[in-house]
Image (tube, rainbow, N blue to C red; front, side):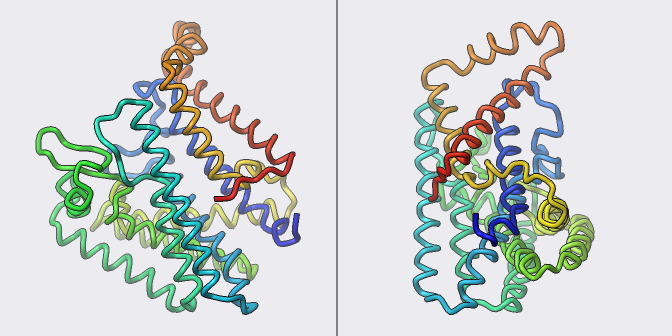
Length: 357
């Protein structure tokens, strides 16, 4: 491991913990019986689960600052770096499209969904990576402000923040048609929580990660604590006008979750990089996309083979539900799913096998 990688083992650990949390909330044994903190807010609001995806995008920004900014400072070819960013982003988007094709086949879904988690990660990596390469820090701050204020104005112009009728959902449905995540049978309107329009907010989240990553490089942990407090305060204040909402990735949600992410990054850095605590989650972190995509492919294969429901019923529900009720077996299944992939990632890490997209 290089000295730089050892210095920021906290970033790998935080990325890994975030991916493990993604697998946990995405794979309960029974969606009808999930403990409330492991569910997204129904619409407005912010549960612990609603912190996971913005945390990952924030870490994408941190990683951009740690990987790309030093190469710019030492004079590497900007055009070559830009091409590398765009090629990697295209691969991430392509993998997301492939996953959705597999899901369409495995679950016999009524339509193909174009956008998704990996698609949003790829778009944010492309746009923010190029900004980090070509724009100075001051311009990056201006971009964050422009994204937040411009997106806020766009949402406000729609006159509503409610499901299906908000402007972001209406534009996404107009552009993507039936290829959105959800269609309202009553009105025919569509919505996608990873839609094109709400990606404006996600770009701001990723850019905040770039700025946080630059503070981390400079050892300015104090800036992370201060910025986190300011961002959370602004997010709460903004939520009186535009609510915290993951589905719309509202500006208040960007600031609230970005502030929390700054504090979590600072804590991980102090505990792991400076005090030598073990980098728990690192195995997931160094193979993050492989863990996410591999677990999804496994899920789709089990569903297509008709094994998913019997596996949960015979392995967990039949004997646990009479003793503990229906919620604990659902959680136990999710924990076992994460544990299985933790073992896989540990084996890959021990053999130094890393899948790069």
